[in-house]
Amino acid sequence: MPKQTFVWDPSRREFIKRTSLAIGALSLSAASYTRAQGANSRINVAVVGAGGKGSSDTDDTARAGGTIFALCDVDENTLNSRKQKYPDAQTFKDYRAMYDKIGKDIDAVIVATPDHHHAPASVRAMNMGKHCFCQKPLTQSVYEARAMRKLAKDKKLATQMGNQGSAGSGLRRAVEVIQSGVIGNPKELHVWSNRPIWPQGIDRPAGEDAVPASLDWDAWLGPAPVRPYKKDTYHTFKWRGWKDFGTGALGDMACHTVNMPFRALKLGYPTVIECEAISDNHDETFPKSSRIRFEFPSREGLPPLKFWWYDGSPGDKAVKPYRPSNDLAAGIIEMRGDLPASGALIIGDKGQIFSPDDYGSTFFLKLADGGFKAASSKVQGKDTEHEAIRDIPQTIPRSPGHYVEWINMMKGGAPAYSNFDIAAYLTEIILLGCIALRVGTGKRLDWDGPNMKATNELSAARFVKREYRKGYEV
Image (spheres, one colour):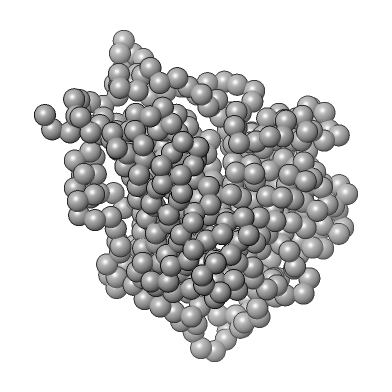
């Protein structure tokens, strides 16, 4: 009998209302995060990086119950636009000046800047005792991830990283199904992305252009080394591929695509990381396409596991992006009908689970012994799961909303599902791949996770912690 599959889609399941989130890895009680404000108190929020993703972060936090007290952005045009929606908010171009002036009046911050500002802006606020929502990737370096994780714990702050897929019922159901043992012992993980969709694999352009009157270029550079402004090169969206400002396709997308398997497979520190292949090599930007291998030891009753990351845009005619092998692709096509531009495949000794999107919101299951091929369906007008997973119990409470979790945590509720205790761990592991990329192809890194160092490759040390311009130190 041929191997057969079914697909599960969370749109067929209702969210379960609840007042807390279960996070097994946390040792701190929810009450330890409670601040002076009561359950109905006003929560004043300052926004660092008001445009782009910061715009929706601001709006979603306001809808969840936060009061937008201040807006900070290096671009005056962005500030003026957002001020129209939040006319009572104070405005600033430099978050350091904002913290100095109104720090005593704010309870929390949203940080939605380019990656190189994430840790400097967040750490400064957290040191003042402010709760923090920071966009993904949480930090630009391994050192920063470790520092933010510790600081959040020491200060007992309510935190959340902006990988919103964490709130999806599909991701949580996938974690439950995998941890139930349906696919047996997981041995391999393959994750790929259609990024970059921004300029990458390029060199720095020559010369410089006049800085727009609306932009504070020095504040935009912040902790990064000074360089000339070039029109349509860095600000607003094209900074992600530059090593001084972003973390490339891996740093940008793996906080989404690796989020579900990271949780389901209980991934801790890898013992080996190696960049196996890249499409091109440039001093200042990440490559157009890459393949990176991580090796994880046995953990919590699970066997050793190898994880491959692949990236590259199918729409870039200058490169053939790296992807899983033809054999693996054939199996995915058998499950889904095609090989999507991004996805996550977990291979166990009894079957496979495949999620064809960036957030783990839907998944397909293929059992090694075959036996069925069916989609979830409606029975008497109600959504239902296939019998293969219907009896697997729900162990993870469903979310009232990604931003509601953060607001609730400030009010003494349970820790948010992507709070820094787990989000910083995920980010740190992902950024090890960026270190491998920068060290070079074919250079195996034997990794000592607790001590943040490669025991066999001294050149990796300079990528663990970056240098900062004065005034932006972490």
